[in-house]
Each structure stands twice: as C-alpha cells, then as structure tokens.
Length: 185
Image (cartoon, rainbow, N blue to C red; front, side, top):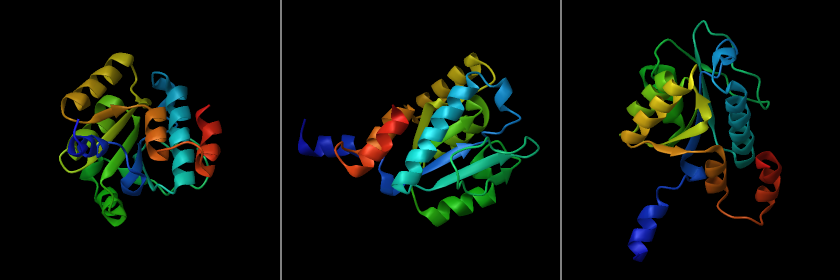
C-alpha cells in the first residue's frame, strides 16, 4: 500500500476537529417501546460523555409531542424541535450545523429506520456520516436492521460506540485516554 493510499484510508476515520455528535429523538415517551432501548441510551450517554471531554459539539433533536430527551450527562444543549423526520428539513438544525462548520456527523438515536435513516441518507452526499449502530434502534429489531442496512448500502459508515470513541482518541497513554477509559470499560 502506497503512502497516498494510506492517507486516503486514514481520511475515513472520524476526526474530532471535524466531528459533531447528533442525537436524534432520544425521547422518554419513545424509549419504552424501543428494542434494546436501555442499551441505546447507555451507549449514547457514553458518546456524550466522551464528546464533553473532547469538546465535540452536540446537536440534540426532539420530535414534537414525544416528550423530553432522556436524561443524560449534564450540560446538554437545548434540543432542536422538529416535525419532519429528516433533520435536514429543519431550518434550526441546518443553522446549528452550519454555525459549527463541521463535516463529520456521528449519528445516534431513534428510530433507526425513520428519522435516523432519513437524516443519514440526506447527509451522505455532503458529509462524512457515521451511524453508531449500537446507539440507535427502532421499535423492533427488523426495522433497526433494515434502517442500518439501507444506510450502509447508500454509503453511510456503520460503526459502534467503542469504534468511534477510539477513533476520536487516536492513541493511548494520554491524560484524555485515562479520563475516557472508565467510560468504555
């Protein structure tokens, strides 16, 4: 593999200076019906904790009439309220994303086959989209799997909570690594 090929491959890794964590509709009223909902919340909270340590911005969304975002690690930003399933159909979401000037989206939330998929599929042409599979779900496993498969087939990178965290860390032996390690253990 040439040096150029290595550089091109490395460009697909998540870069903290270019990343934003987008948590889609992780709302209390939806969670009881979500397949492995507790696991989704736990993994999303890990992403948010690590994001805070690494100073990675977060955008939260809430589908109207479905209640508040599930409690998470403190200091979460004010959520963007939306009616559309696709976050990119919401002006406030677009404004927040544009203000950040970042091109790598780390997506988590619910439901995988509706709001998460529509957002990911809309973003894939202009952004490096990373769908965190173990931090997203649907009301049933089949719809979760179909949503993730469709995203994968359209060029979205499918990843896991730990994969993203370690890509963001880049190396062991740092103070930041020591701070993050208890979160992933």
